[in-house]
Image (cartoon, rainbow, N blue to C red; front, side):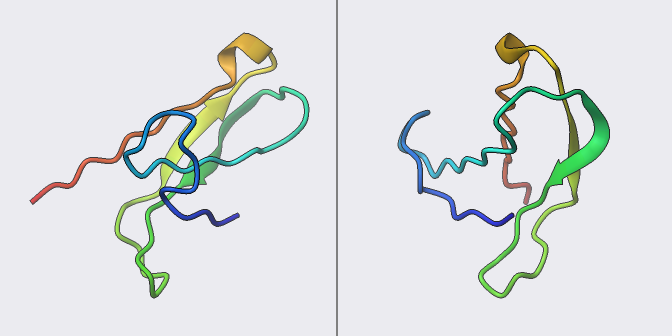
Length: 69
């Protein structure tokens, strides 16, 4: 899936993005990842792997990217 930053303001106005991965919670370990791409689809970050859980109260995942110079 692809998403553009700034399409959701549910978490603030600072370029947030959001994906809905499914309709019910599922355990996963090390199989899902996010990566920043530029407008030409070239990678701007490494792949960041994350886990999900089978509990509704644990399935909002925040990944914050910070620019390193």
